[in-house]
Length: 220
Image 1 (spheres, rainbow, N blue to C red):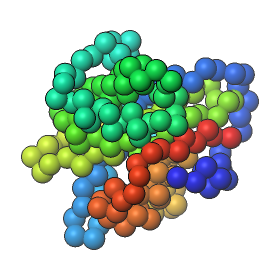
Image 2: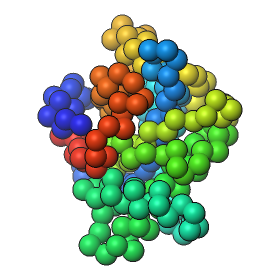
Image 3: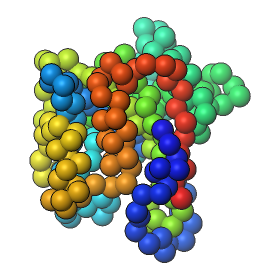
């Protein structure tokens, strides 16, 4: 992830006073058909007070209850991997137990949001830390968002069951970027940046090459 590339992208004028960034999770569900990478996206309702009309990934803010959720011992190896992946982000801690709790909280947020918005029940081992972006100071709402990549099995069939989106669908990443360039759809800076980065990798297999430690990006 290249922070300089992200911060060089056009952005709206920032006019709001300081607002604290809230924790959130977003899940990029991917599948590959031949040489085409597809992603599951939602088309946000134009009546929403955040990202109105934009094409987004399923996700949302962390709830207080997410920190209390216990995945059990079976998920501990997965969560240890997540602790490693998030070690440079705000989820990190000098205390191993706290870092583990923070990673568990964020994983629960991502899984819960996907189920609430799409009905899909993803398993923890499908979730891979991918990116961490913090909204710049100056926006009316700010989020410290943790993005996961997930590759659901074919029998996982997400649906649009949230009132926050008018519809949702699997689309090729290239077609989304093309539609955004032609101004047929609206993409927020993080969404465009992440989709471009994923497409540059070329395949799902290529996404998991190398160390998966996430470099946080603090938007400017």
